Structure formats: C-alpha cells, structure tokens
Image (tube, rainbow, N blue to C red; front, side, top):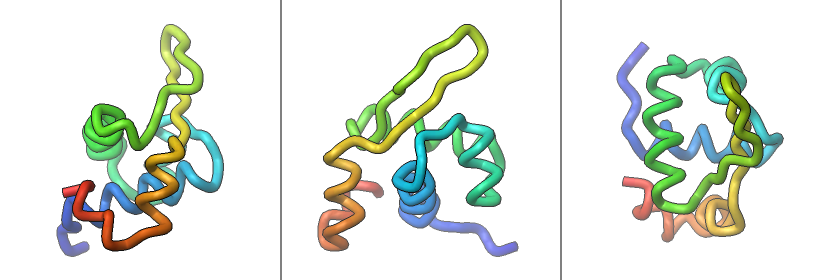
Length: 83
C-alpha cells in the first residue's frame, strides 16, 4: 500500500470520528491505518483542538470531533491546518 500523506491520514481520522466517537483502536479498524499511526495523529489533532477526549479510563480513551474539526471537514480550504 502506498504511503499516505499526513493530511490524508488526519482527514480519515476526522471523518471516522465524525461518524461516531471512538477509541484509537476503533479508528484504526475503521480507517485501516495502523493504531500507532492513529495514536500519533490523534495527539496532533488534539493539540490543534480538532478532536477531544470524551472519556478517559485507565486503559481506554474515547475521542470525538470538535466543532472546529467539523468546520475543517466542511471547508476544504481550511484543511491546510492539518498539515
């Protein structure tokens, strides 16, 4: 499989979280991206306030998309923020 660009990976993650709040492993399964890669990019998306942790357990975190993340998906010109 060809290597995906960071923007593509982050868009796929946002789209998965737009469908339903999910853990890193659930996002990895739905996007077919390695969980370590998903984990790394979710941390970046969290730092940019595009996703938030909705639930934090001892071994599980569930993430959801924020209104800013929704806005990024709706307006392709803003997607440079993902880079």
